[in-house]
Amino acid sequence: MGVLGAVGALAVGLMIPAVGAAAPGAAPPRGAVVVGTPSASCPKPTFTAIQPAVDAARPGATVYVCAGTYTGRVSITKKLRLLGAQYGRDARTGRTTTAQESVVTSPTGGFVVGPVDGLTVDGFTFSGSGGDGIDAFNRGSGFTVVNNVFADNHNGMNVNATGPARSTIARNRFTANNRGGGDDSGTGVLFTSGPANAVTVSDNLFERHTSAAVNSIGDPDPAHRSTGIVIRANRSVDDSSFAVVNNADGAVVDGNQATKAPSAVDGTIIYIVGNTDHLTVSRNILSGDTGTGISANAAFGAVASTNLLIDGNVVRNRTTGISINADHRSVTIRSNVVQGSTRSTTAPGRGIRLAADSKGVTVTGNAVVGSSDVDCADESTGSGTAGTADTWTRNVGRTSTPAGLCIPGRAPAGLPG
Image (cartoon, rainbow, N blue to C red; front, side):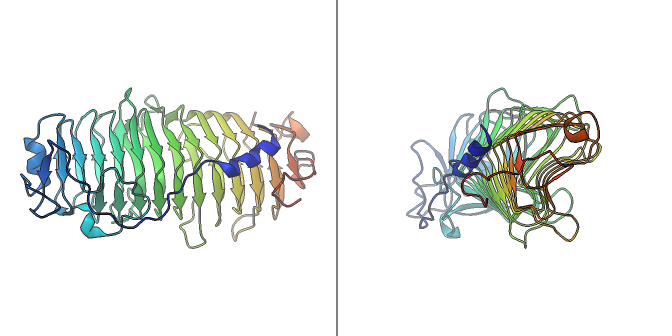
């Protein structure tokens, strides 16, 4: 894409919907099993609780849940179309009038899904649960979770999927799902207890998670990576990390926007942990607070990742823009813009940094400006560029260690020269 092309990432099509007024519930579809208390907006319900309706519904049926608060876990063991009162309505903005929502809450979690293919969950609010809003880690596939609000649960969703049918998590709002604390809490969408194959997480809003917006822990067996995860066009506000990618094959993290205020919990915005092959991180816009924008670091005993492409991202006002901290293989850092990397109390401000154990990394066509310490840094030694173990070509940056990694020149349009 080239150095100038990297600035095009600023124009990534992240469509943030306008704030709308609260809307009354959508009407139950014809033929649906209706759950709720009789009222003008809930005509002729058959059940007053969700679980009996789910148990009685035939596979493939539609269950409509009227506005109201429903307490207790719901076990789902068949393919259903589960609709809340706000089904079909984008949850990222508006949707703040609780009385117009179908609210699911429980001390032990909301929906618990068995090995079900083709489940749809649309238009609910999952809130205030000591467990996860949705648990779906029993090897189902082809699920659709759209237009829901997940707020103040242990985690928003804890799922896996077998594929090959693609699953979709879209147009949801995940807010501060940190209830209970601990190492297993604080994530919007958590892939665990098995691989997450062919799952797309797109067009969601994530806010204030103490662990991560999306975390692909997956299956701990290195032979069982998640395949085909797509994390695209989401917005993250003050999450500790936006995306933690681990144990994944062929994943894509593309076109997301993440901003952090100083009050947010510290964390790397896009964190490539390990055992990941053919990951593409592209066209993301990441900014604010201390820490690293994009980091590849084989932490927690994970094996090194391979075939990583970090391409066309914009990283602003972090302590370090892009960092390769471990002996990963076949890494390309290309056409990124890194601006204003600023010293924190614990680390100098560096734009692109390769650690001493890096080897064979290709850094090409990047623009790095305004770092408080150094724009381009490579701590390795070898037979590569300027005595490093890596290859640096056509990068723009005023300062580099050692000299010659980045060449001083005019910054792309829109950045300080």
